[in-house]
Image 1 (cartoon, rainbow, N blue to C red):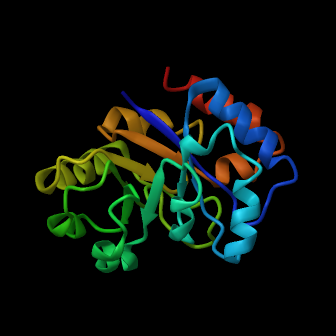
Image 2 (tube, one colour):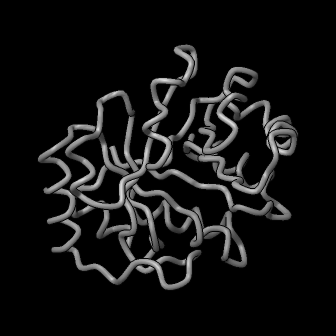
Length: 198
């Protein structure tokens, strides 16, 4: 099954709470909370606004809060994987990030899925990524699958016009960021992208 994951914007969107609740209601998507500039207290305050969907949330920062809130788990950035042994046993590690196929050679199997990026020219980061063909995507995922059986979620520049390529080429899912939060109507955009892979 091809999964769509939504990553929160770094800075709060004015309708973020309403949008995230609606997305989870619509298709039970996993929400990755990525707020790199938030203090621990700001992060805590943010999470208190989502009691009914905490079980869908994966924390990118302030992992200690996973012991305080009943979240799905935590995400380890590439640089944080070396600290994986320091994560308490009762905190579930869900995912990590890869940026080259060679990185998959050393990935351990405790993760539920891996983000691989960038697939396309990024929508939210300037001068990051490049346009990619279906053949290149298929080659990338084949290379990754040589080294790991963990599901791979594509990230970077994914929108309604190219998500079909991501699915067709063999990725296990797609993560959305800029396509959602930089659109005029994030919820409508999400619904349109989701309909492209049904």
